[in-house]
Every structure is written in C-alpha cells, then in structure tokens.
Image (tube, rainbow over the protein chains, first blue to last red):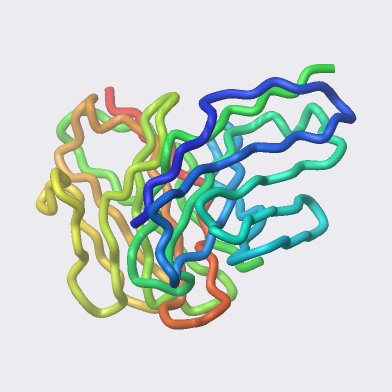
Amino acid sequence: LAKTTQPISMDSYEGQEVNITCSHNNIATNDYITWYQQFPSQGPRFIIQGYKTKVTNEVASLFIPADRKSSTLSLPRVSLSDTAVYYCLVGERGGADGLTFGKGTHLIIQP
Amino acid sequence: GAVVSQHPSWVICKSGTSVKIECRSLDFQATTMFWYRQFPKQSLMLMATSNEGSKATYEQGVEKDKFLINHASLTLSTLTVTSAHPEDSSFYICSAATLGQANTEAFFGQGTRLTVV
C-alpha cells in the first residue's frame, strides 16, 4: 500500500478555506485517494474519494494533479466543528486489504 | 452512507477477564470486516481482517489467541479480548466493506473504548 505524508497539524480560523495536502509518491495505477475525518473517541468518517482531477461533494473538494503523486483536500468556510484529525489514504477501491492509516493532520479551527 | 454499529461503546473490565466487542453492518452485507486499534494521540493500526465464514487474517505482531475474531454472518463480526490486561486498554474500531464492488468505501463503527483495570 502506498505510504502517505501529511502535515502533522494545521491551524485556521472560522470562515476560512482550508487546504490540506497529502503526498503519495508511490501511488499505484489501481489506487484511489480517500480522505477520512475523525473526531476524538469516534470512528473515522468518509469525506471524499477520487482518482484524478477534481472531485466535489457537499462538504469538500479533492484536487488531484495529473501525476497523482499528491492530493489536496479543500474545506470551504470551515467552522469550529471542523476541528478534527484528517487522514489521507490510498488503496484499491473494493480491495481486500485493510486501510493503512498514516499519522493524519490535526486541524484546529479557532474563532 | 452505510451504517456500521459497534457495541458496547465503552467497557471497563478487570484484569484477567475477557471482553467481547460486536460489529454489525446494519443495512448492507459485509463480506469483509476489519478491526483496528487506536492508542491515545496515535493513528489507527490494523489488527486483523475478517472474512465471513473463514478464519481471520492477523497483522504481524497481533496475537490471534488473545484477540479472537469471529465473522459468523455477513452482518456481524466479534472481537474478543481474552485475559485482558491494562496494556490492552485502547480504542477498538471496526470497519465493514463488500469486496469487489467498484464503488466501495470502508464504513467505520463508532468505536469501543476498552479500559482494563
């Protein structure tokens, strides 16, 4: 499974757009990129998944350059409740392997 | 998204006793369930992969005789921590998936906080 690298922590303020970048230099052809959010003492929650270019849903956008060696999760107009740990994972969609979680990015939103 | 439910949400047990944690997929059939462990301020670590009707596959360093996993149906997997010790205190999380589906994401339970005293 491809290894991912993310910033350990980030700070921002309410109403700002937050971009978290993840590096995955060894991503394989069949790998998808998935982002999860985790609050303390809760299981991870799926945010968004993509393969290439741009994906957008009601909570976030995911930008993936052509070489797919990195990806950027974009959270528009964050609020205090977006304070959480965000994990970037790469792997085959529908594959038989469990997910390998990196250290994640602890995002802290301040008033 | 699909719902995965864990029970209990938290449990306190005495050292030397066994604890069973249930993981249920409520609205879909999960061919595969994964069990993770998470220590404070650390990431999730995969413990084992459980396929319905077959023996679980354990990650390196995870004792299969200590962490018993049963996946008797497509909607239920259980993790039993046998002879629990304080160092087993952790946050245990399961996830469920259906293999081979092109649009599969992993759905996670809410986790179980185990405290061994």
